[in-house]
Every structure is written in C-alpha cells, then in structure tokens.
Image (cartoon, rainbow, N blue to C red):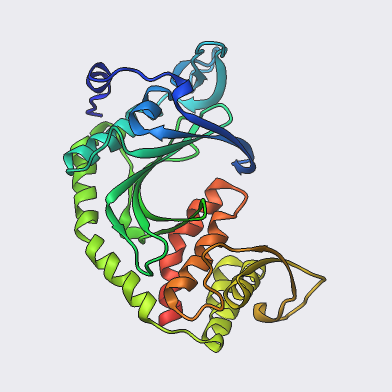
Length: 327
C-alpha cells in the first residue's frame, strides 16, 4: 500500500499519550472483548496507536502469530494466528491512509476532533474524525456533523473499511446514522489501495452531501402520525431489529422515554408490548411528529447496543428503515 506514515510523522511532533482523553467502556464490548476509547486531535491519536509484528507460529508451516509490540510499561501480547498469506495492515497505516485521503480531498486532517476505539489488546480499531465543513442543523436545535470513519483489524475479524456517517450531539449523547451503502468502501486489497483511492471515494461522497442535507430537511418537513409509526414499528422495524427494539422505538416516539420490557408476551404486536419507562431521551422531540425526529429514535437505539459491531451495523441500516417509513 502506498502510504505517507513515515513522512507525516517526521512533519509533526509526536504527542504523548497523556494529551489524549482516554476512557474504558465497560458497557460496550467488541466481539466479547472490552474496549478503550481515546479522544483528541487526529494527529495525536495516530501517534499513539499500537503496532504489531508477525512471527512464525512454531513449526506450523501454514500459520503466523500476530503479536502486539511492547510499549513503555506494556509487554508484548499475542493477539491472533493468521495464514501465511494474510496481509497485515497496521492501524496507523489504515488511519494515515484515511487522513491523507481527507487531505487530498481538501479537508483539514491533523487537528480535527477524532476518536479511536480499540479492543482489549488493540487488535481491532474503529476511528472517527469529524468534518465540520459539512455540518447541518435541520431543526435549529442540534447540529449534525459528517464524520469520516475507518475500521481495521490485525486478527482477520474486520476488513479495512472506510465510510461516512452523520453524528448528532445532543446533551453529550452522540446520535449517529449512516448515509447508506454508497457511503461505505471496503478495501479488499490493501496492497493496491492508496490515499488517492480513498480521496476519490471521499470526494464522490462529499459531492452528495448537499443531497443529504436536502433529505434531512425533507424528513423534517414530512409529518408522521401515530398510525404510521405503529405500522412501521410492527412491521419493518420488528423484522429488521426484532420485537424488543421495535417496541422501544414506538415507546420513545410516543413518550420520549426509553423503557424495559415488562412481563412476557406472545404474538403481540410490538406497539402493544408493555414497557416500564427507564430513561428520558435527550432531543427526542416526543411525541414524534416528523420523519426527522423519528430517525433520531432509531439513532438512539443503535447507539445503545451493547456490542460495537451491532452499533455499527444498525447505524448503517437506518436509511433503509427511514425509506420504509416514508414509502
């Protein structure tokens, strides 16, 4: 892969880990492993990513061992076995490719606010950088920012993916939703991918941002009534996300409160499943009367999933569910 990791690192001063906001998420896992979230400037995050090496796996002629390098007070840790043909892509290389792609697409990269989520031993990475130039505030209350994201792993669990999503900050609770499959680029061959390829993909997505803004305003102007929300929760949401999430979606849209399922139910429409209110949702605008605020109900439910992979999957499913509401 063509990359400018070394050049970029020479051009900037390496930031210490102490300059980053670090937190351990005990309420979210990634493939059954706890995660750590670091927030700060994208450049500082790049400088503090773990690195990995591969070694022969004993006398096994088919497999190699991937080991996280020791750093400061950390000892080397084995994290995976992979085939001899596996292409090991360092997290720093993946994120630098996205950063260079952003820069070539005309966006500020080094100093933008960003976050990096790492699995317990760093074998999986999810990075997100905010792009304030493409922000929009459809309802005049809660601005939405476009984010450029990438996923990578060194244990074969997650391919290198670059994608765009929208992030709405409401009372420190991030509500996110994707922009559909057109905003996702899976990198199948890391050797043949360059920052220029990523830049081309980002530019294509940036060209569609105005259409996304128009869609948000259309959702805000589109009225939805209780009967629409009930039918939508009972059918497409239930089919895609299951009866429990569909019940919570309808409850939040009606009351502005999330809830916990009470008792047992059998062959009951999701809209009729009883819930005990547990948490008032910031920015819910209940009772929901517009398609835009209904999209935020889905966003809340996606964000509250207990595994990172489930969060990411559901975020990207929101545009399709919104289409089903409006059709």
